[in-house]
Image 1 (spheres, helix red, strand yellow):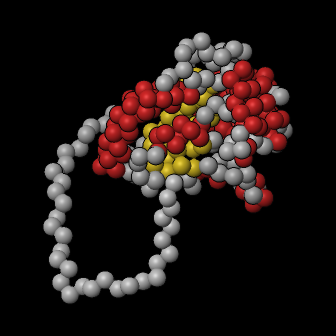
Image 2 (image 1 turned 180 degrees about the horizontal axis):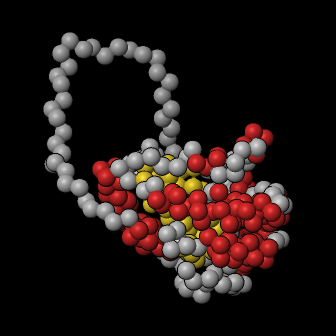
Length: 270
């Protein structure tokens, strides 16, 4: 894995056009459906972890992956802050119950790596707890892989300048203001604390059996497409044969007579 470099400036590449993005995404959606059918057919267990900088686009990328597939097979796991009971449990315990069964793809929108990132930087755990996590996580992930789980880990990296612009957009856009929390502002002020935490996490948990894959997402559209293309290459799949679909003949009305109802139609003319 190549080390993620600091980059204070935005990308110099021309942003991808929406029309080009949507055309390519449509093709990739077809492949994701094929992958979905293959995962079910072979009863594969796939676990995808998404981590990264605030505003790097984890949510949008996950939405792009899942918007044309079944939510029963592509399950998104986005856990809230732990309860008092969960805080008293073994740290990994609340995540283990969400791991995939056969024929499932579990996508973690942030994961057990909270301990190596936000919890460490914001002081929600002790340094001793962080070090224990970094030491134990490779063994935990090796156990997942040995159990037949295909584990894929992504880190989304965005530049300082682009992060600043995206946060400003959230402040000024009433549709996005809900995405901005006091924690986001505090995180923004600790860019290099997060950089050091990220580097320590990579060093301890980037392994041959569960490597980190870094995606640059200053160009949101290119970043999403790159991740989906990469994901499709991580899980060898084949298109399953299917019978030609023909709509059956619809039944005749017989003695059915429409009943008058006082429906409240919501048709509006614009």
